[in-house]
Length: 388
Ligand SMILES: *Cc1c(COP(=O)(O)O)cnc(C)c1O
Image (tube, rainbow, N blue to C red):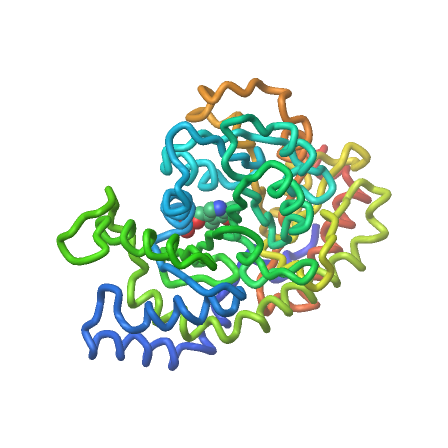
């Protein structure tokens, strides 16, 4: 191979933060001047604005997305003895959230074309102990709101969304976070809306749940030194909220750019479908906010997923795998009792999926370079074979 062209990073938020530098510095200075570090003004502002953007009345800032799930479920009254249905192919934090609430996660398989929770499998997994469906709007695409609500209504279940990858995603007239009783978001820096560190929020239309959650994140105290609940310390930092306040108004434009980039990937990758490179299906058009752009490297491909990733790395293109091991096969969770082979789609996907570079500001030239590199790899798979 000749000289290596400019690398394409998996995520690059440098330009984005550069453009906001003055505003972020000002917002941080304002917090330092006011000194309202704990549950300060910026937190209140952000909670209101973010909840409104989701089309929901209440938002409660917490310290991370994992706590947004754990405390959110507890505030909904879910805990010991309750079963919560979750997809097997999600980031492990979904599972951690359910377990930290004291509830029992019941795992189900996914649709292999979208990687979203298989709703028929979810319905089959319902038992008399089931209290909630916990859909994950994976990669930035919402699980069908009407599909979820039909099951929830039939079986009198609560819906709790894990929207950590789907800020402002929409589908069938619903915005992520507005489908059920409550929803959790993460502001981990690389999410579609990221803080300068950890952060999370639970949104809910229910004022009682909101009140309980406000106490739970604050030592369980609805008033100072009166501990009505066994709570914890999990508040959204005022400094993080100040940064999020600067970034939130830009989120729709950033999501638009992600969606636009995904469309270009889709178009350019179309001819590679017959070579086994198949993008995950988008069932929600512009409502997909593409936290990740994921393709499957199927058995029709001359290369395995790992070979393709290695080949791209060689050509200076960073990729990711979300996620390489499904939750039920993770060492720490084997005692949940799910054997290998139990969730065939999730397991196959874990071997086939590859996340391509995706971030706001990803240029057309960068996308084209990624696609050309994939083309080269699948058309001339000899080079990787020669290396091994
Ligand atoms: C990031 C993420 C979380 C957890 O968020 P943290 O802020 O890192 O705790 C939960 N669920 C999903 C699907 C995520 O992607």
